[in-house]
Length: 338
Ligand code: TYM
Image (spheres, rainbow, N blue to C red):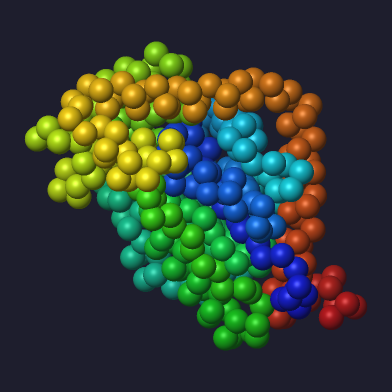
């Protein structure tokens, strides 16, 4: 463990490049990264090793990985103060996963709801990588001695496993890892699909209108909001028993920065069509500068940022991994330094 207690506290988080980044990813995670990066030393990863736990087209994956890096920057992650890097560029992630595999129980991974959901129909043929996904995620976080992990609600169980593994390793091998806390926002932690308010907005949404992508055109955004499902009743109010309207209001609240009571007052006496129109307007206004910035990041600039990120990330990852190896008796070439 690094004993320099005076260092800045750290955050780590990531997005999986399996599809286009959407409003759920932004409101549940990225938006908070942008805020937190000023108070924490920050590591934002594009987790391509997680992406390959399900089959990917290799060219598409490579392009998507760069697109997500661009979107990190375009939504406000500042590469001068935050480290942006690609997971597979830092081989310590895969290596630490192996060490953590050896202290993880099969039963723990079998209880992971995301694995159960994804492997439901084809359990026998599901890949071992998919099963091991949460351990790779724990390695991501623990390598950087992370204090806080800003994520949406769907990652909560993975964070609990990460904490359990850190505590177990520290108990068995001595204080090595910081035990990280999740940071899950009160509003926005679970943005729902626009076409089915019982499902979260997701990169793999089957309905083409359920998910607002950050690179959607204005026309597409308007169409999707127009088709968004609503609930019975006519009042526009936050109400848990009316999840579709509450979801639309939450998106509006987060994008405008208004208080919930002001949002309700604003829409008092209005109809659903008005809400959808205004929501489309604020979303289009939010996305326009983001999309412009994406266009303006050159390939060379992106290469430089990702190279720099890899170096910064690797320096810390290597220290943690060396420590883990020493503690586990995997001395090898470290023998002289042990
Ligand atoms: P991923 O790529 O599915 O999602 C990226 C982030 O977006 C959040 N999110 C949502 N938030 C609100 N509403 C939604 N509908 C919604 N959908 C997604 C996710 O909670 C996440 O914070 N396993 C992770 C990636 C990962 C990671 C890590 C995260 C790998 N290693 C280490 C943190 C720390 C994932 O698949 O995220």
